Amino acid sequence: MALAYSYCTLPANITVQPVPFTFHVPRRDLLELGGLVSVAKIPPSSWYIKHDDGEFGISRDWLAAAKNAWIDDFSWSTHEEKLNSYPNFKVNITTDEAGVFSTHFAALFSKKADATPVIFLHGWPGSYMEFFPMMDLLVQKYTPETLPYHVIVPSIPDYGFSSGPSADVELTFPLAGEVMNKLMISLGFNAYIAQGGDVGSFMATQMCGTYDECKAWHINMLFLQADQMLSLNDTTPDEREHIAFAKTWSESGSAYAYEHGTRPATISLVLSTSPLAMLTWIGEKFIQWVDQRAPLPLDTILAMVTFYWVTDTFPRSMWPYRFLTGIVGAPIPAMPFSLTKPFGFSSFPIEQSVLPQKWAEQLFPNLIFFGKHLIGGHFAALEQPVAFLEDVEEFIARAKQVVKI
Image (cartoon, rainbow, N blue to C red; front, top):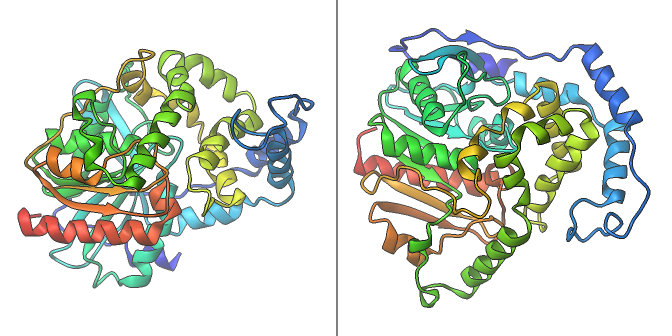
């Protein structure tokens, strides 16, 4: 727990006192999980589920091996110890429209007077655990006295350890963004940078486009609108390959999102009946959305799914899709997008969306950083933490030359 104590000095101008938070799964719950995994049925082989090339989704052989590993090899206690090694807190954030949100965040607080506050926003089916490798790198690189940033890594509203609204209203991006902005203000940060991927990319964009306190933002996923698709003549061969990849994913890999957006109750109830069913649904994404030249370990995938199971996250995590994919076939709606605040983008080749560099330079006059990578996928911070952190640090340095943060 030395790490937690080293980086937990709260900012001097904090307005709401967070409560330290530690998470522990009761042994009976872990035994129940193990029992449910053990008795879960895997159907006999058939034409579709015997294929292991990903064309039809998860293969039977992968699921059978993962089931055995979950029972025989996986240790949640190792991951629980890791998540508790960081300073973790909870704080109540109140909104007029939706009541109170019990909001969790991990943090690396700096002791430097001029440290730059940065909030890192995860997505689905991820969690704040995606940023652990990056946080480890920061701890190796800096001490609390030299850390140039206040690193705030929340469970976004209604995910993981954060609640949804106390009022009986549907959570939306504007509400979630309000909560995250108020979280930063409550910590004493009236000027900060937002970073996000997946759902977090939409949230960071919305926050920077809405709130004065959010001075700049960096994302690693952006779905362009139809009128933003520019000439292929302004793309490189690898970017054209990425465009083709993204088109194929949209045609054959996005059905899950429309299920989330149109029938969130049904899919939530189905997957919450069996951890093996949840592993199949979520595990597919942690396999197919990453760069296969550097796949995630099975232990990491099992940890992510276990986290969703023990926190009952899945039924609560559908809210972003009501806005994004609530109408089958409709384009993904645009978020409020600032064309004046410093904007940064990191491009990884196995991402479902694509933003060629020359397009970015033409579309966004406020683009101050574009990081282009040869390896990596959707879960950039988890897959390629070194490259991810290098991009973020370079973006922060450039943003501070443009605006006061």
